[in-house]
Image (cartoon, rainbow, N blue to C red):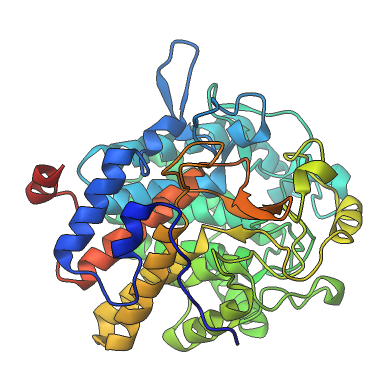
Length: 463
């Protein structure tokens, strides 16, 4: 396996923090203040706004940047997956401040969208009137995993909505805030959650060939099963904490999901896909989210997933998976519309363009690997975990865009790709998901060093 290294930071002021030796608590506060002053972690730029300029709750996938916003691009849409991880991360790192309030607004907006535009679709499936396990013609009949954030309305353009992980992330994030007392369940939200669980049961999500995190090849994805299993276990905790509650769906749905999801994951992990064989994948960046923040695998399996991820770790960041043709070499020259959505057949043609080592390197994963090592260190106090936590935090910081970036400096990129022989940030920069992953990585590092990870008067004083 290649040795995981720290590349030279694109921003010189970050060099002192991009080292193998763990930072001090004071240095974490210093780098947080530096990033704050540069707007690196300012996710508010991505808040969707209505015609009057009032925030509507959700976030666009990519924040406005130095070249303007992404209006008219698919990256201006609101993905459930991104938004739920973002909502969880901003609540975790600022539960009683704007982060917590924004998380509640975000999840409320998603729930309203699902209740208003998707509930009837699920009922048709649950009651046997609609079969959504067919070909591409059925994909729009599934609950939509992306919507128009500015209006809260459904996007009627064709899209591959067979993404069970996105539904799992919503159920999990919504339940996390309920368990924390930040966002107590209401009757309509309880009903929605039960409906989603019943839908996932009816389509037999533990065997369903969905599009996964990356909205691509139809397969049984471990990274789609994990979020649903985490949601089932979290929701059961909520029920157990409220003895008077009755699950507002089929009485054994949670038990059926728990049993079958756990069994399927056991057969697949630490791989991402084993079925069908033509789409098999061992290492995939999406699996790190099963370790953190979902915490749906034990430490032994977490170690195996981390070992697998060494296969996809690059010199700047981490590939989604090997032979990934999205944002491959000279992608914008090959595809005039870099936001184009591909069918399964079109993907086969696109995949023919990829060569080993030319896969884009994504900035989502290093922060999550760092955060997971932080959780392991906090539990065991083993120094090797703290060293790994620092290594991947340093890599995350080193990838922040430099002054030459066409989209602006000091930004969290979605990915770096090869363009005319040079590695540079792709068009989806800055990516809000990356921003919030880095916020969580800094939070866990501060906790590892004895701090709270939360905003404090001393941090404010540094600002």
